[in-house]
Length: 472
Image (cartoon, rainbow, N blue to C red; front, side, top):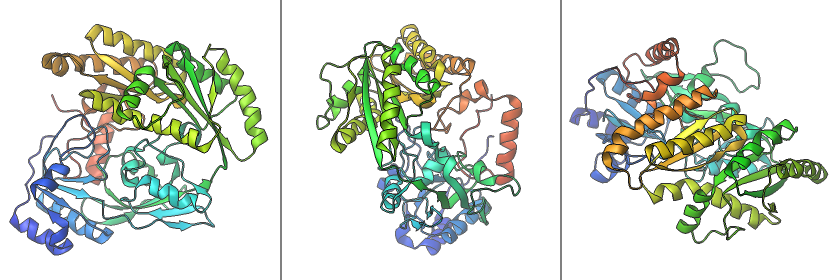
């Protein structure tokens, strides 16, 4: 949809300062630049204003004003997104949730927590773990990402393979609609068959339907034991081939991560403070974790796991024996994304396929690299078929990067579709993937999605320019 938006003027600034106070409305160069980018490539889109509400009522008044004045409004969390979902494509106002970060309100008896969208994910996890409770979704950015942004993209992380992603823990949401009305989407219950599931519709909608201001999450008991294994392979294909067979043998690890040699090498070169058990790096690694409450049961799972892995000819399997060793391995894994991105201009594709087809997907990625002359570094959540493909620009010319590489990415997504997969497992569509949506979504699907968008946001002010392909 092509639409002209009004940019905020002095009257708009005066009104919003009356709602928030002058200290929470900013248009200085530093604030504007900070809100113009996220972690997606090197994209920059400048807003006119950045605002910092603290309450749902303040959000409601700002949204209502933007609705009546035809001002584009983009919600921003911590800016850790990888699909351009928080970029203010049409300028206008960026609404930051950074001040909506009150300490989580934990209901221990019902194993639930109410949290504002600006709370850092790891802060939430630490708070509930102090009570012996567990919120499992753990994206690599959990130390900086906001829980509201996790909902916007339905983030996952390593433990999604056993415990599910963000959407699996949301019971109820408080949201502000595009005209400023405040609404709850569900209830604080574990079962709910009351009308349409508006809660799940909001999750993964990337701020295009409404603005989330309050979140009720379910929690589970915190596992007391974690056993972590590093499994090196001299053949990357053998590493990803082992994954499906682990599950076929009745095992469900709490994490099963794939890491190519180059991913580890880039990480260790950028982070010399990190340690890794192997100095002579193998070609690929699986990081496998088992968790639970009973040591004998974990030993039985281990006794079944190791023979399955050994069928795929790994090097010597290494088991972390201390909490420090376990944490060290996970620090390396969680640092990979930032390390790879610091090496070169890059594009990251968040592909996901049925896990049995991971070997075929990985092989095709490398074939495309040879065809289009790019280097790729792959890693990701192998246990649920989610492979992050980082394409490095390296020595590619601007013409090849801007004109030829999109052809390679389209071919990649067509292969993903052929294998029964889709464009994104956890990063969302946002700005950078929207023009590939036609590969996996039929015209009827896109029409239905656009219709839903129009019902919730008839003036199309909320996060415009995202998800839907450009008109041609």
